[in-house]
Image (cartoon, rainbow, N blue to C red; front, side, top):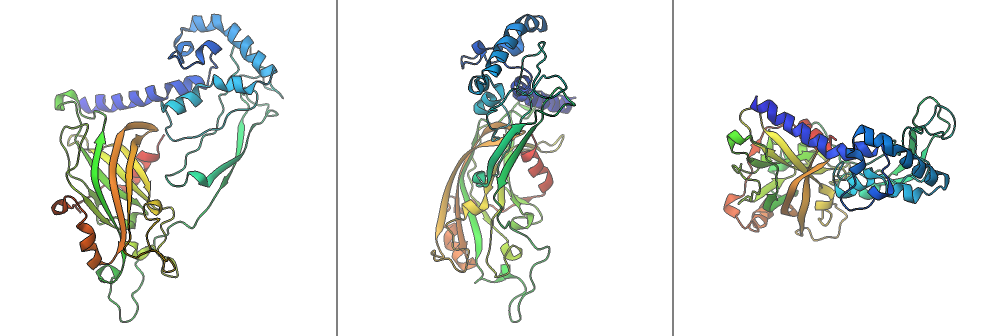
Length: 387
């Protein structure tokens, strides 16, 4: 029963987080509710009888703005846009303003003939979200309703987007065959360079309570380091930190060393490309009774983390250059924030001999960790992308 109550509590929290957006999709509040004075949902929380009494004035005001084509005023009452701004739901998603008549509730026919029992509302929307480091790769050029659609009391919306494409990392299922006179595996070649990541100063703040009160009412967090494509980091399991018991603001007194297996992720000319490759730092809660739970994930673009490295044969960058990235970003799950993660990621493209010097950068060198845990890549990524 404790496990069922726990899962029910998570579902209820998610529902509460998106409730404002659901309400906004059905109702355009009056101008008195469009200010940022904390009364945004006053109309939504009113009783059915109160809403019925007030709908006449709401309808008249909204219809007046529609007739005047005052799209700016109508959009100022859009609760979805304000919920996105306040990060009450769908964190990281974007949508464009609606510079056209509200698309609900209309008569089944051409044009916009509104039902006076419902306030004209922008209930039909398109949202999009880009992965970290790819925010500029999606450019909208069209966003409009279809007023001639006559088989519904909604007018559907259509959008057009330019998506900038790059050659994403492709991992071969099998390592390339070694050339004659070379060793069986590039990983064993001390002169072969690989991307090394040293993750230090790792901590999280304001993590949610995942355990029941019977178990202390806290969380037992640890972090999994998951890659896409999978072969970059998979070593019969994913690297992880230690588990910190009963702590919502954990600080890991250890540094994590990751080495990317790029032997199956190179172009035909032998150069490494990390376009489209991701590092998912997933905060987990250890749970013996029902299996470990995902608290949330931080997604980082590996190409950005290694943008200053000499990973191309034609690059003029110093081969021993170390790039340092300071991370401070929300932990996301189901479109909501569940605390913050901070860390420092140092990256370098080194041979095995050079790696020893690189690891001396670790403030806790004697605790550099490479232990792995067997967790499903599909589950980790789906929990991050799921709305």
